Length: 104
Length: 196
Image (cartoon, rainbow over all chains, first blue to last red; front, side, top):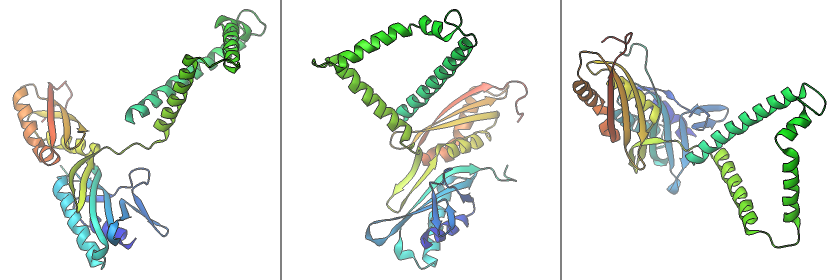
């Protein structure tokens, strides 16, 4: 569950990511104790690793480069939390985009 | 599964509509008592319920009889069971998320829902010269890629060809990485449209 928190925090720190998206019905969320982390799902993989899938609302920006930046940030963030050995594939899915105030 | 879901929705709507109409009819016919004129007995007579009841009784008696089951009846029964199972499956199976895949590498997938891509397509197409309003729709392909359909309003002096070309270029940052085929339609904007 620490992976979920670290991955979400890292993803939210990327410029262009607005917030985590729980899918509308909470299917893309992880419960950590009493706290719910919307927009991140961590699943066990073979070899003792965990995949981290991020579901995000993005700003109106090119999604491909943003997705790559999110992936890199998640790998860095999870690594900084000392969990890089446990991290498997990192998936990024954009569920909505949002025109931010001030955006033309 | 999408077809089943659609069938269930249509069927549910039709059944609810029929129930509502039947309820309204019963209420109307029940206003007056008695067995003639506008009353429940005469309504039943009107739609042939006594005859239907008799036919059903004979059918059920035939089914319960000791003789061999008619192949047609057995087939109809099996069909009804199958239809029921399919309708239940259509109602309870969760809808599969229709995503457009951008990258399916071993280190993780990159994908997006159709709606944000359509929003991006609209935002990009609106920047094209001569465009006053845009509606965009994205349909994912069976395996990869898909199609983005853009319907744009254009100013009267602009040419259809130029606007289509400009929209095509504007959509490039979206269509190329996602493997989307653009389909662009334009029409002259009505009065009151946004002026560019």
